Length: 289
Image 1 (cartoon, helix red, strand yellow):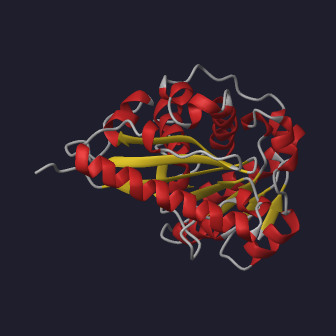
Image 2: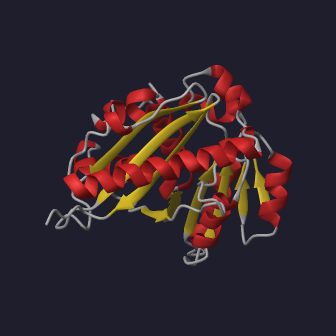
């Protein structure tokens, strides 16, 4: 496993790999690796290619500088975990290296500033777009793997690939969410919570999911405001069910492969003691008899 810090070195190495007809797989991360990240690496083994894991905490996607500062950074442990996996390269650029001559980005489609996290996190998706486009320009991967937990981010990556890298034909792969035994999705932000808070978050996700899905199945209605409890230490930022076809459309994407049938997805964002967690779940369509 080779650790690389500069764009130029990475470009030179990958050029030689391509001359040898090697495919390239990219697994972008912000470090603080957990089972969810490691599942992306396991997924990459389905594709015969050179494997690159990037570790970069992107300052452009944080609205609050204190959130960026407090984001868990565990590079030494991350590298130890990757040593045990079939990874060829780890790209660990400095902030200065990545920010130098950063790509100018166009305005994103409506959904990225008005729906779900886009409605609450300001320039978050624009910040993600800048760095992912930079990674794609440098690496030109054949495959790029992202987790299902950040579904709106996945839509952004697909939009970037279709809008700016159509000729490169990058295959964007969605990997299933990995959960703890209590059902809570693995997240780097979980490390900011105590065991008691983790259990509380798990119960909060599961209870609102059960309530909302049951209501949706019985009524077909999508307004859940009266069903959402709030407390001093736990608030639901949003609880929404959307048809995936609608999401693809509002995020500037063509119809997804399952566009002939309605596929619904429940999205939840909650804040527990100032730590924000998100999750989403596929939902069977409602059927009123």
